Length: 109
Length: 109
DNA sequence: ATAATATATAATTATATATTTATATATCAA
DNA sequence: TTGATATATAAATATATAATTATATATTAT
Image (cartoon, rainbow over all chains, first blue to last red; front, side, top):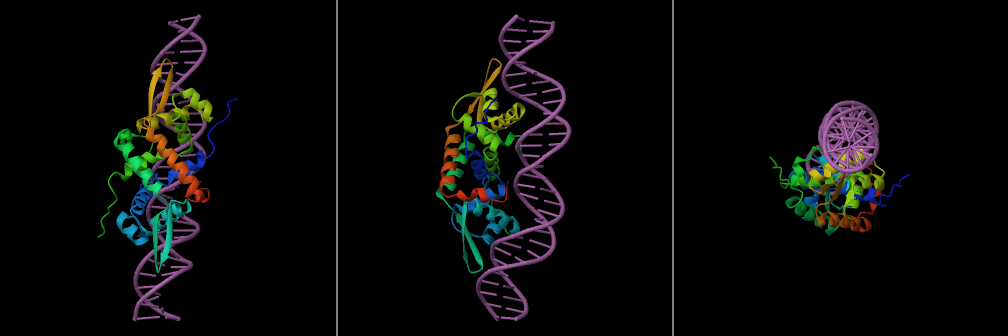
């Protein structure tokens, strides 16, 4: 009877990574780690629809990866923590070095 | 005519994060960053089915997050790069500090 | 060569998730 | 207060992905 010994917290951690694991959300995060941006600016820079961006931003906010403040009718978002940037940078390095084969990965599109 | 100015490489990067964004795969990666493990050991320690583990390991190998070597009828896997561990550790820190709200995130289960 | 063990594969099924669509709310300007 | 602008929400739809199931391959021992 083999015990299931998955480290506690793994589910939460994988959920955190889901914030980075969608192309749309990651492109939003990459804008947010550069600094402040309004929803409209994000819509413009990503080419995503406004409701889609809002849905993703809510997700990122609830998860604690982004923070928001209202300024008149605009709402500004930014990355919550410098480690958001660090994680993305580490991924870039990995991609450049070890993970070059990723575009061949057939498991997901 | 707003140009779509998503940074090149974002799609590949988000794909890389998908390696970490599934609970089963992350629990496998957490075993692999500790060191060598055979498929059977991973099956035992995670409680996942053997084909499921093999499918995930193929995914992780193709993406360059894991390396394998055959030793008789066993195949040993390990993390490909120390940055795999670093990324997981950063996520742990983020989770402890900024991303506490993640279990409330309604966007995904 | 045959059986046993270890792992891989691939089609199917089940499920999770992204995106759109339509609409609602909030703020400002006139 | 009415209209315009900015953002949010939520249901519906479309799509992607995980897990299972059944089977195949590879290695070793007898």
